[in-house]
Image (tube, rainbow, N blue to C red; front, side, top):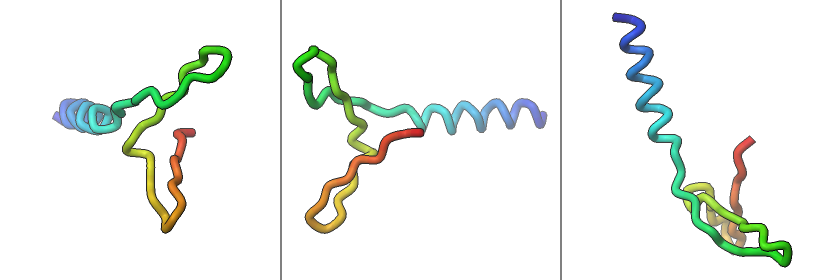
Length: 53
């Protein structure tokens, strides 16, 4: 039972961590730059995007 609960908890946590990434720019080498809108925060007049480790 303990193993089942751990498996279910892992599934819930991992599914909520999935991000919806959007393409925001392409540089001169045609590298696509993507961002997760959920990682963007506004702090006064600044807009900050945190990147995962």
